[in-house]
Image (cartoon, rainbow, N blue to C red):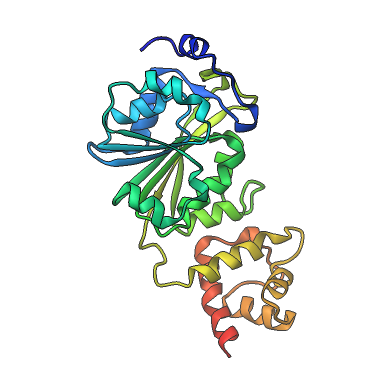
Length: 279
C-alpha cells in the first residue's frame, strides 16, 4: 500500500478536529495491537473509528470478519484504496453509540471482540457502552489517552481510582498492554497514549444485582470529599442512620470513603442494602 500521507493528499482529505482524527501508520505497531487484542483466526471484530483503514487492514489479516464503524463519510475515497481487495471487511458509516444491542447483534451475528483507535472524547462512553451491554463481547482493546488508561487499572485509595475503574471491574479485568508515543500518529495528538485490553467475563458477579451495584459505584464517587455514609444516604433516599447500619453490617467503618472500596466490597454492601430496601 502507498504511504498514507500520499493517499490522504491525493484524495484531498481534510482532518476534522472535532472528530479527534489521529491515524496510526506504523505497521509493526498495528500488528502489535492486533496481537494485544487476543484476536484468534476467524473471529469477528467490531472496530470503532475506521479512520484511514490502517488498523482495519491489520485486523482483517487475522479476523474472519471485521465490522468497522466510521462517522466521517469524507473518508470513503481514502478507504476505497486502503481497504481494496479485502472481502472480509464491512465499513458502516454511522454512530455505533446510537445503535441498540439488537442492531449490533444483527450485524455481528455472535461473539465478537472490540478493537479500536478511538477519538479520545468518546473514550468513557464507548468503553461503558460495551462493558455494560448485554452483547456477547469477548474483549475490548482500545488505544486511549494514557491518563485514562491509568484510571482503568488504578488501585484503591489512589487519585486515579474512580467510578469507571470499578464499573469495568464489575464485568471484567483491564490491563495496559503497551504505552504509545504521540509520534506514532499522523497527525500527532497533544498527549501520549496506551493500549488497554479489557477481558469480559459474562459470569462475573452474575448472581448479583448489577444495577444496584453500579448505582452504589456512582454513590461511592459522587462527591469524593464526603464520606460514603453521606453519599449512600443521598443516593438511595435513606436516613444517615440506616446508611450507617448498612455500612456497619457489611463490615466497614462508618467514616469510610468510597475510594477505599474494591468491587467485592461494593457487592458485599449491595447485599446488605438490598435487605434494608426490601424491608
